[in-house]
Image (tube, rainbow, N blue to C red; front, side):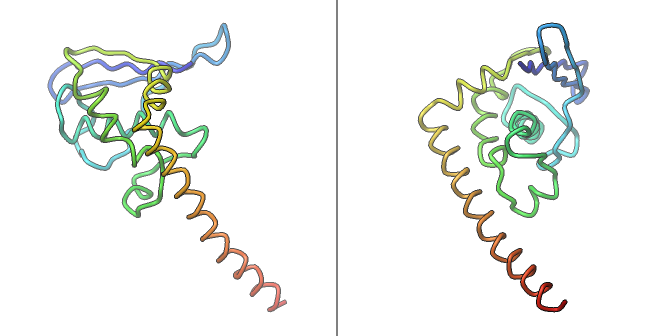
Length: 153
């Protein structure tokens, strides 16, 4: 179970960590990697802006990583499909912008529940379908490339 938590020390000076309990006795903690897209200044919360958008994107990128792989800024900029990209603005509106105060915490169970909301789940399923279609499209080119290499031998 993952727990996401943040602390604001001063405006523009925040720290966001992920605590991951991998079994009943082990706790692994790490700083949430920043997926730079909207904000060059880092994470923020409590309003609708670029810092909160990057926080939402980075949390979802971490949450979806086991199922959908690492999300990088380059992937975001090149339009590679990923659930974190498709859902981060809605996540920001639901979880990040409403935060009051300098400390917050929520778990992946909160995200699981949010993903079960019909409107969000429908968007998530559409993204998954688009990812499958994109993967099939790229596999066509991989097969053609492999066929061309085999014919050159």
